Image (cartoon, rainbow, N blue to C red; front, side):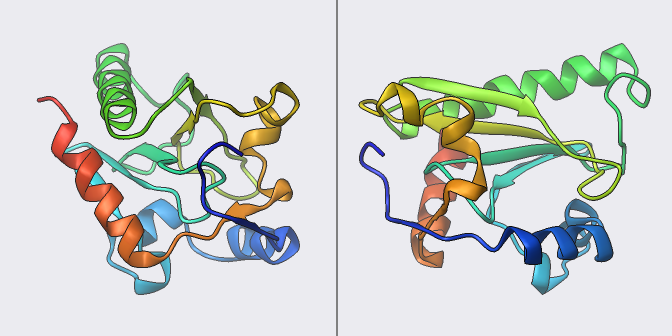
Length: 166
């Protein structure tokens, strides 16, 4: 898929057990739990952005409020939502300034059965990906995740972080 690292199989059953039986992954990350470590891209008093632990596209980031909120419709006031979406936009711009990107996918996923903490996914589609491998196919872990080493992820997080506009 474009100029991306190799994809490897993803154990979705094991992942499902982890997210349904384990702690909230965002709260655990923010608490410093080493089992939930991610590469930080941005942090302020109320929001955080970090690289996805199981990326399907290089530069795949998650943006989340620090407070454990589960619904942007019911748990956020409009002012808070607009601040949050402003960060989503700034992080997306920083990603596209860092990596060649044909299209930026943005979505809020999660479930009350696991990954309930509100978060937005930002997934940069690189140029040259065949149409049948774009859209949902490109972001589904069931189609494999990228094998990216920790040092490369740390460097990428730093590059994105350096391009986020205040």
